[in-house]
Image 1 (cartoon, rainbow, N blue to C red):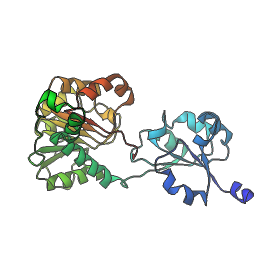
Image 2 (cartoon, rainbow, N blue to C red):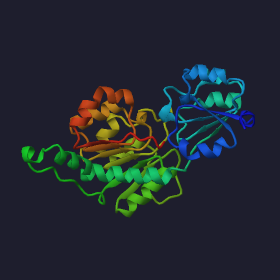
Image 3 (tube, helix red, strand yellow):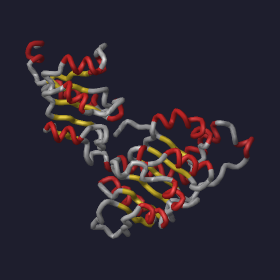
Length: 296
């Protein structure tokens, strides 16, 4: 049995992808799964140990300290396939993959409905102040500070979707059912009835909610900055279900502190930013909501 197992094609699994437990047993019948987290070796040494035999890798951005880059590829000269459990690919050096002829498979649209649901949930939570009110009561602030501030309606909002791809379109459809007015910005105009704005600033001036659904690229890094936030206005809310680096987080914090926008909800934020600003985020629970999930 051991001998037969050793003859199976080897697949190296970097980190412990959250979804791995769901397909581990099935894959283990067809491949020899090399689980890096079960080894006492460093990741680099573990990869070197299997450098000549591994042709496929499974990874997830949630568990990788650095990108899958040329340094990793040099250690795995036989690598032909990278499977990521995420939708985004910004943790993989795509240029180097193309140069080496390495194929990439991702979750693609698998999580689109789930992420769209979460975006709507974040918006409802932020504008209705659900989580903030819960913390207000649990922290015993009611008798000390009096009535908790009222939330506001979702249905009357003018929502701008930044990136009308698979997820963005599903967010738009859901919020349209709430009675929101939808418009969008994207690289290209889509065959939809929603008003299209080629520029994010112009979109922000015509909305009071921005939902960020675009991919992180060199062009979208810090796409949402102070100028965009000021254009959104004091009633404005930012919901980011994409990568944290699309927003200039320091400028966002400044706008929240100064009351330039009303609130924000995040699926992810920059971890280094969190370490320096966690105290502020905890104190300003009325207008910011943060979730760090590992589904992407």
